[in-house]
Length: 159
Image (cartoon, rainbow, N blue to C red):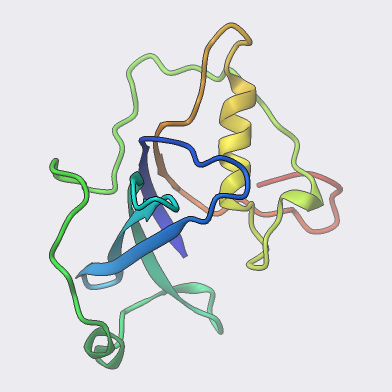
């Protein structure tokens, strides 16, 4: 399951452009792992970079599981980082934060793991900004604090 991601978009590809993504495992911690990636357009130009932090979920208990040694051995780590600055996967809340947007979810927002799909968070962020703000998603950083799921026996309520 995805915990954190940071993406820097240099150039958006045009419709129907073939994009090549190079990705690698960069680090294993006790219960999480880091993967970086680079995206290239059909002319070989770097168009985006990103880093992600993942956890393994035990499907029987739906809880975070320790990464097995066998899985660690199967991946060859590449120490190359796409971002120069240190990435911790933890965002610090701004002081004086206030609620500016509220959303009642829909079944269409839910992915195969029964929680809100990652792309929906970007759409919600976009909707939360005033219309006069130019928001182009060229530098994105998201830290998921908890899963958001549809409540059982309730229509369109996320919790």
